[in-house]
Amino acid sequence: MQGVLIAERLKILSGNANAPLAHAICAALGVPLAGAIVKSFSDGEIWVQIEENVRGSDVFIVQPSCTPVERNLMELLLMIDALKRASADRITAVMPYYGYARQDRKDRSRVPISAKVVATMLETAGANRLLALDLHAAQIQGFFNVPVDHLFASPVMIEYFRATDLSQTIVVSPDAGGVERARAFAKRLEVPLAIIDKRRDAPNIAEIMHIIGDVKGKDCLIIDDLIDTAGTLVKGCEALLAVGARTVSACATHAVLSGPAVERIASSGLKEVVFSDSIPLRPEAAACGKIRVLSVARLLARAIQSIHEETSVSTLFV
Image (cartoon, rainbow, N blue to C red; front, side, top):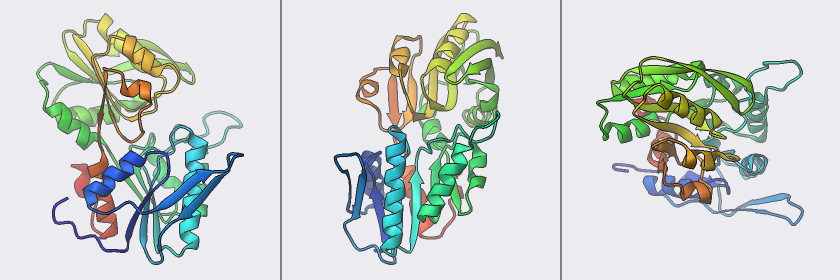
C-alpha cells in the first residue's frame, strides 16, 4: 500500500481459520505476520503461545469463526486471553466472518440469542474492538460494548461487476430481508432491482413463491451476504429461469458452502457464483468451475491501517 508508515507496535496474528487471508493482509500492509503457535493436544484441547513480545502493542487477530466453528472461535478466545496476559495495549478481533450471526434474535420460545453470546465471550476474553465484514444482521454491532467497525465487501464486488457487460443486468434480492442490500448494490451498478418472494418453513429449507419485477430476457445477479447449503440460491435460479431470465449469476460475501452446496451449484443453471475470501474454500469448492473468489485482503488492510492510525474508515464505504 502506497504511503503506509506502520509503527513497530502494530502486530497482526492469525489462528488456523484463514491463514492465507492473514498473510495477504500483511503483504498489503508491508508488515510480517507475528509468530503464534496454535495447536491441539491429543484430546483436542487447543494450546496457544504468542512467540514474540507484544507488550504495549496494537494487535489484530485475523480469525473468522467458520467451519469448524467452535474450534476456530475457541482459538480466537484463547489468543485474545494470551495477548491480554502478555500486556498488549489493544486487541482487535478481525472476524471476516462472524459465526452464529444468523441467531441474532429470539424468534421463538426458549431459544438463545447466540450472536449476543459470542459478543459477550469476545469481550470477556479481552477484545477491545471488533472489525467485521458483512454481518448477517447489522444490529449485532449493538451486542458489543466495545467499538465495532462493520465493513462491506461490496466495493470489491462492484469493481468486479463494473468490468462486465451490464446492459441487460438486473440485481435480484433472494428474499424480502435482503432488499436493502440488493437495492444498494443495484444503485451502485445503476441497474434495476427484482425480488424473490419466498417462504422458509425450516432452517436451510426454502420454498420459492414468485418473482417481483420483470426479469424476462435479463442477466440476473442474485445478491446475498452468505451462501450456506445453496438450496435457496438454486431454487431462486430455477424460478428466475422459469420466468424467462437469460442468465443467472450470484454474488455473496461468505462462502459457507456446507453439505451439498458445491454439488448443487455445479449441477444448477447458475452461470457464476462470486465470493470473497473471508472464508477459505474447501477443495471441492475451489475446483468448481462456476465459483470465483475475490480477495478482501486490501480492504481489511486499509481498515486495519486506519484503526491503527486512528483515522476514519468511512472512505472504505465508497
